[in-house]
Image (cartoon, rainbow, N blue to C red):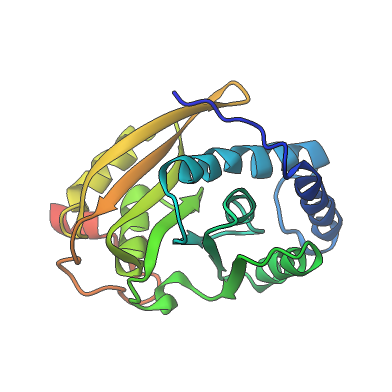
Length: 228
C-alpha cells in the first residue's frame, strides 16, 4: 500500500478551487457533495493519490486524458501536481466543463484544458500516454473507451474502491480483444477507506473497430457478446 502525501505547494490553490466549487455548486449542482470539507476530501485529497502516482512513475512531457472528469477531478489535481504534463479533461456535461474552464482561467492553470463532448466522439486519435478516470464506469467499459485513445504502451489508470472482484473478472474477459495485457493494482488508504489504482497497459490495437456508436460500450458491453 502506498502512502499519499498531502501537497504543501498547492494548498492555497486547492482551497480556491473548492471555494469556487462550493459557490458554483449552489447554482449549477456540479457535485453531489454539499459540504466544503467533504468536497475537499473527496475531490482534492482522493485525486492526489493518482496525481502522485503519475508524478512518481512517469517523467517528462506526456499527455494525460481524464475521462468523465465531472467538475475537474482528478484532472485539475493531476495538472497542478504535474506542471510538466499536458492534462485534457473530458465530460459531456457542459455546466461542468464551463466550471473547469472558470477554474483554469481564474487560477491561471496553463497546462490543462477541457473538452465538452461524449467520449465516443473523441474518435481514435491514439495520442494519449495515460487515460484515467475516477468513478466513471466499470473496468471493461472503461477499457473500451480508452483503447482507441491510447498510444501503444500507454496506460489506463482507474481509481476504484476495494471491492472490484466482479469488475475485474469482467474486464479480464475482454482485455485481449481491446488490446490490453495484464494489470497491476496499487492500493492506498483514503480516510480509513481502502482504495486502489488499477493499471492496464495497452500492448496493441484492439481486435474490434473502436469507438463503437454512442452508448454501445455501456448498453451492449463487449463482455456480454463474448460470453454468449
